[in-house]
Length: 194
Image 1: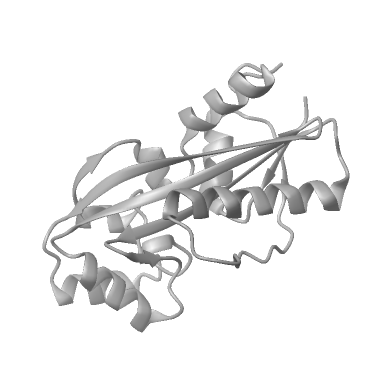
Image 2: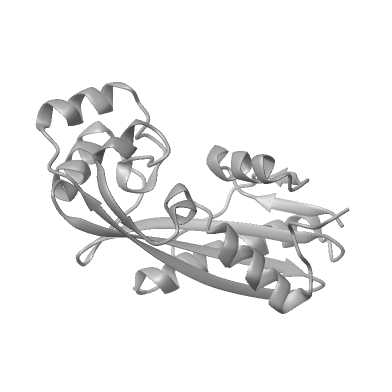
């Protein structure tokens, strides 16, 4: 079975590689804007589905399993996506210092013309982070392409005091949720393909 990962995220690609999931990549352009306001768990499912459908429409491939994902950080009523610039990243990190926030990832898959989607949420508690620590972190440029301006698997992980839930979700791909969704809907175990 051919698996297509519809993602530009190097972290998702790396996770597939580390799990031994053979795949090809599709990194076409997708308009991630939505008409209307949605709760974070719905927003990420809708955007992940937009990505999967864009890939399907581009490739017209009914025989492949197309997988996509989207991740956002929610702090109170604010959705924190990827930072626009260093000032935006600085403000995000300062606002999360000493607080709890939530990471939402949506996953979507298309196979044989059928589309499914689901979402996962993980609670993160940041320790109190100093302005100096934030500035040093920004100097690494690790924040530039990450929802919430940090990567838990990199230096940004040192800001984290506690994780409640799936850490893979925070990296950007709730692997178990994805595997179970695909198995339940299509009878395909992405961990056991030969």
